[in-house]
Image (cartoon, rainbow, N blue to C red; front, side, top):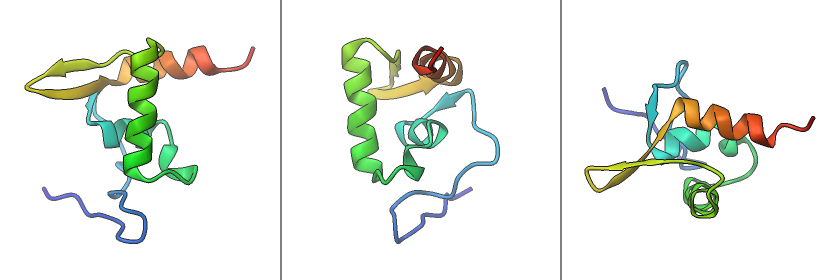
Length: 82
């Protein structure tokens, strides 16, 4: 199944259900960075920044970086104001 891209923004179509293991673009969409004026490239930079700081855990295998849904949810929970 080929993903459709929104040509005006560069973002693919938003999934109705996010998988447990996400690509950086899917992770950015899960965090709704596509709705905050980011491009896929700038969103990936943010994910890398948070990963490098230790705020967001990622999984590396097959020479790629992947994000577990539970880690993204944990990241959001930590960022939630109390």
